[in-house]
Structure formats: structure tokens, C-alpha cells
Image (tube, rainbow, N blue to C red; front, side, top):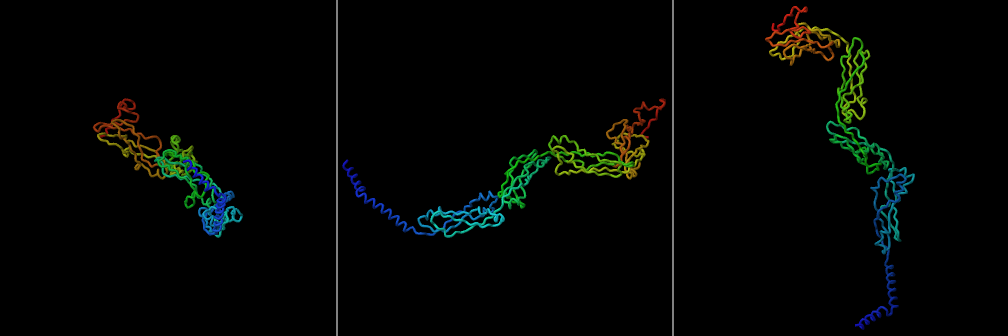
Length: 457
């Protein structure tokens, strides 16, 4: 067994080591022959490859305040026809590059061609002994613009309506941002906007990061073409309760002799206010400054701004007018005495089984007002009424009511009429003023009683 192994080793040694010099020479000769044959067969050939176009020195362009405005529309690749040896056929693409040098745009000539097409050559570099024969395209067209930064106002658009009985006020927010981009685009910015909803709100609406967008005059969103100094802003929209309060006019002074202030009116009579609840609670009315009357003989009209009278955060409701008009009517004065027969006094009452008795003496009343209106009033058309509604049987002092126009007034205190109410079967007695019972009905000297009056007679 051992002898057999030795025979195998001896045979292998003889195979590899016998005539070793000749064998090495033969191996070297074969390798050399392969190289010679390969080089003889490595002929030139032509191939077309496609390479992406690289924009170089774009940072230099930006540093000098310029930007390419049609970058997204530039040709992205170039087709190159190259002659090279067959040996690099498979790796040819790795030895070729195509680029456009943007630094050539930084010239005074090109600075005056903002917005115009500029032709730049596409340069091809080959890092081997291959030869570029042709390329398509040979150049690209770029358009440059100057980069500018300018402030632009921000507009907050309020959407929706707050809860009924509430109103939102002007929002508070960062109202100016800086816009950076190509001058041709920045110049088209019409507004920087954000939208805030106040639908059904009954308290302040606060948003910390409301996104903002740039729009041109046509309402197109051009935010992607620009850089804004901030992407969002904080917005607070105050939402206040609405309160309706009366407006109180006044005047000072007196008109000329023979004239009087017949009426004082304000329009509107109330105003809707909005504000914090605690501030609204302290407002009962809006008192206007008095209209000065100094010997006037004609009516006066004055205008007031409610906003000027408000303090704190209280404001006039947006749908309400801020202006109010006060009218002071001044008329020529007339005073007139009118005697009204007792028979002309109207009784307001469901009499039923009762008898009502009033003194037979006529009633005298003095009225004052515009001369033309006072002149029309007399004893026949001046309505005088006694309202006895709800009064029971007995003796009552009732104020006589006169139906007068708004500009005519009665002078003096109320006219009191002593009224006796009794059952129809009874005998009613009129008591003179100051008397309240039958015991008081005696003659002035205390010896003789006054006669009783029967209303049924």
C-alpha cells in the first residue's frame, strides 16, 4: 500500500517537474501570443451613448444673485457619438461625461439679458483615448433672473360665521413676511394668505401654525417658485358677544325767546356693540355729548361717532353704522288756555251696575307747543279721558288724560278729578275737594249740611 502511494507521487513529480524549463517557456509564449493576437484584433469602432447633463457652478450663480428660471424645462441628457477601441466597449460610458458651465453666465452682458434665452454649450469630456465625433444637442437654452427679497403683507381670510349672538373682530398676527425668489416671480405676488375658520365659535380662535401661501393676481398659488421667510404664522381671532344698548341724546342751553325745543330724537335709537363680556356688562347706555342750543330759532342736527365714545376692547358691530344723528326740533312757541266742559270728558270703564259722577264744573288746561299746532287745538277736538278701569265703589281722585300730539305738552301738574262710583240704586254724592266722607259735608259755618247729588236725577 505504501509502495503504491510512492508510485503516484513519483508520477506527479515527473509530470510537473520533468523538463520544467521548457514547460515555463511554453506558458510564457502562449500568454504573449494571446496579447499579440488580442491587440491585432482590437480594432476601432463607433458607438452612440446617452449621458445626463450636469450643471456645474450653479452655486456660483446663486452667490452672485442669479437663478435659472427654466431649470425644470432644460434638456436633461445628450446623445454622443464616439469612436473607440473595442477593448473598452463595455465600459465606455464610464469614461465620458457631459456638463454645462454656468459660471459663464456671470457677465455684464448676460446681466442685461434677464428673462431672455441664453445659449450655453454642452461640453463633453472623454477620459480615455476614445474620440467624440458628434453630439445632439450641442447646447441648451437657459433663462436667468436676478434673485430679490422684498416684504409682502399677509392677509388672513376668515371663513364661516361664529355662534349666533357673537361676532369676530380683526385678527392679530404677523402681518408682513419676506419673499425671496426670481424678480419676475416676486413682482407678480399679489398677496400672502392664510385661512382661519371661526364656524360656530363662541370664544377666541387661536392657531399657532397657520400655513401661508403666495398668490398672483390671477389667484394662482406660486408658493413653490418662492422662498418665504416663514412657512406659517400664529393667528388669534377675537370672538366677542353682541349687546344692544340704547343711545341717549341731550341738549344744553335755550332757544331764542318765543321758541322752544319741541322734540329731541336720535337715529338709530340703539346700537349693537361687541367686546369682552366684562366690559359689555358695564355699559348700560351710550350717552352722547349734548347739542348746544344758544338762542337758536331753527332746528339743529348733529352727527356723532359712537366709536369715539368707546373704550377698551369694545367696538361697534361690523354690520352697524358707527354714525348717529341727533335732531333738536325748535319751534315757535305758543301757549293756550282751553276750557273743557265736563260733558266732553270721556269715561273709560265697563260701568255695569255702577253709576259714575264727576263734578259739573268745566276743566281748564294750558298747553304749549308749535304755534301752528297749538292753534288747531280747541275744546271740541281736545280729547280728555278718565280711565276708571279697576276702580271699586267709592270716592276716587283720578288724573285726567289729554290726547296731544308729540310736540304739544300740557303745562302744570296733573289735573285731578274727584269721581264718585256707586251702585245704580244708590244715591251718589259729590264731595268738594278736600272732603272724603258725608260727615265733612257741612256748611262753611258748620251749621248747615250741603245738599246731596243724586246721579240718577
